[in-house]
Length: 384
Figure 1 (tube, helix red, strand yellow):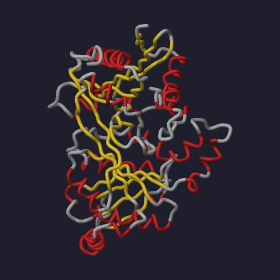
Figure 2 (cartoon, rainbow, N blue to C red; figure 1 turned 180 degrees about the horizontal axis):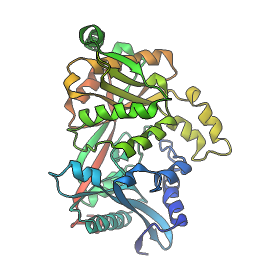
Figure 3 (tube, helix red, strand yellow; figure 1 turned 30 degrees about the vertical axis):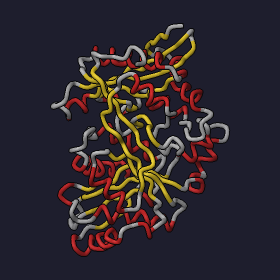
Figure 4 (cartoon, helix red, strand yellow; figure 1 turned 135 degrees about the horizontal axis):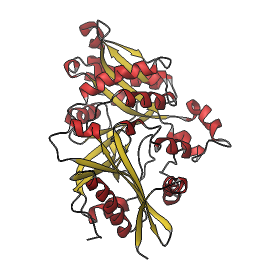
């Protein structure tokens, strides 16, 4: 039977869109089921701040009435405004499909057609809906469990996409750090950390849950300065920060949310490390009831790993060693909490400074994700 791709229309389609990865990956010990309730909220244009500056269309692929794949197509005005020197770009995301090149080709054609209708010339992805959500296709590290905000796919995803002439746009690295192992750190890291306060008057403090929305304004001040030169950069605006603060309230842990302030109290750096709620979600199996809430309440006892999601310093302060100070603070927290190791990233393959920093911390690359691109005038029609 031929593959039919249609836009998601109505609650039943949305439910099937959300349920597909549960069927595709349920037997994998490395895939972590998301909360179904959270996925519905994330895909709701009235809830997700992405829709303040973006548009999206969800699609389902069916064969003989059975759902065999899904994809999103989206455009982002915030991305357009930041990347005026690039071809007009649309994105695709939420990519899931059975091991069938015909299904993948039909999904990509549907997404590319929608993106082309929006006046775009290139399609980039996958990303759900932005690069700061789940992004990329796993190409190394299939035997490691996904951590928070991290996709997991079996190896055939990469194989089929590249058979369909999807071109590599960028690889993203995840670094493993055993943050309880101080012996693995190069001594210069400790020396730089020790000099930060006496030499530059810069101090670390922990974020406040009560004032987390205000802290997100400080985070954005650093992010919009320190990440500006990144290949994928899109600045955070007020709506994004409102949504981010509401998300982070659910995983906030004061030990791991920190800012660096200069002598006059000005913000100079930030680190947001999230104890990995995926260790809890795996036990919840996608549902809050009947027992999921109990695991969530016990999350501090369950969680032994983390993800360093954001760690950055304003460009004019990057010579001060404040990044080293924040690294060392992570090691100090590992001595006091149940969290003993984690993953940092993703980090762009082209970000030489950060990748060298991870080497100095005794880290190792344990996962790689690939973001693909192609002109939307040339869409896949089948495997090569």
